[in-house]
Image (cartoon, one colour):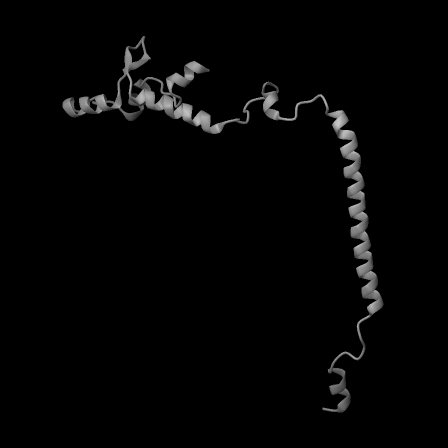
Length: 151
């Protein structure tokens, strides 16, 4: 290897261009300052003009519930869940009609378990397919009847 080739692969012989780097930093800093100034002016403008435009309007969507279409945001979701659980618990532990015309009643679950232990399971599927058994059942809803009446 000769000395010329080795000298080409050594280190840089000149320093970084300080003027260019300083110019780039100055441009970035001034751009940030201009953007900050523009945002401050806009916020000042909005604080002056917006309260005058919205002075008579209610700020909370909860006060304008009737204006929004279904499904609406629940204001107290825990309360609705508690009502649902209470209605389910009442249905599990009380007597009541499911369908008066078909004479279908609801009995407490503990009593139903006791009757099944005493009598055994009824033989309702003799000679029937699962589809015909499902079609013969009364219509079932996921919502307890007590909550259906409150609507």
